[in-house]
Amino acid sequence: MAKEPDKTEKATPHRRKKAREEGQVAKSQDVAISFSLVAVFLTFISYIPFVFRKLYGIFTAFFSDPFHFLPEKNHWVYLEFIKDLALLVGPVFMVLLVAGIAANVIQVGFHITFKPLMPKLSKLNPLPGIKRMFSLKTLFELFKNLLKLFVAMVVSYYLVRYLLEDVFRFATTSIEDDAAILIKYSLIMILGFALLSIPVAIIDFMFRRYEFEESIKMSKQEIKEEHKLYEGNPQIKSAIRKKMREMSLTRMMAEVAKADVVITNPEHFAVALKYEKGKMHAPKVVAKGVDRVALRIKEEAKKYGVPIEENPPLARALYQACEIGDYIPENLYQAIARIFAKIYQKKS
Image (cartoon, rainbow, N blue to C red; front, side):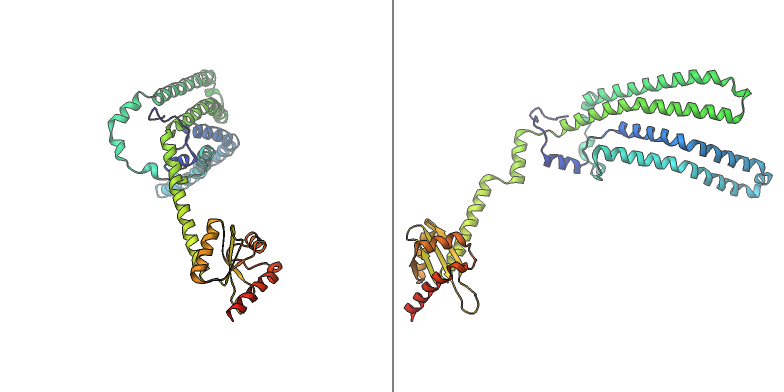
């Protein structure tokens, strides 16, 4: 249940993930019980005839051999009997184990955590325990247990009622017939409990689901804080982006000082090129920018004596075709070659 009145918002995926890691899941033990009862009933239908024949063979072999009653052979007889009994009971326990695991996996998926087993000092506080005594969960548990008791009484009443009709025939029937009657009523009892446990399990699961959703609800402030934590504070993100742009611009301006030429549109575009003969197959763009960045590039070029060539069409073409670090495209080789030739002539 929601612990505070301001927790009115549905839990976020991050909150759900955290709750799952801490072992908080919508899980009903009655679903596992219902699964187990149905599984046991289906197992017994096909397994009991085999068990009956096996037990019949065990007891026949035991009582038909007088040597089994010798004291020096007793321990071997007991060991053999325990081994046979374990082989008979083992599959039933395996079915119960698989049914219990399957019921939990269906409800919450495959998830193992030991956090609920960790000791917590808050559990020693008696006040939460007193509050739970008068909570909706306690009332629901009381209602559910009374419903289970009522179902058990109804099923037991009708089974005993019909069983009493056959009990007086036990003295006149064979052991096989008596065993068949007991098996029949045992199966009816298991089936009755299994079928009646299904609606109880559904009601309990729906309540657990509701209780879980209420317990992980969040306040609007908690959602805001979580958003800041996982998505980042918008102001901080903006400051980081600004700092990264400044650092990138500083690095780019440092490359302008090493450039061979800056090609500009007088007002809007500026592209700095560098070419190292023998190391590069073509000139490379080391800096580019528009408007204020273009002005900074031209200022840096003047500061370090880098030649500036005004060629608006070429400046726009380079800016649009290349990113920083790219080599110029082949269709601009000729135009760039003329500019580099002009610069080399001036230097010579």
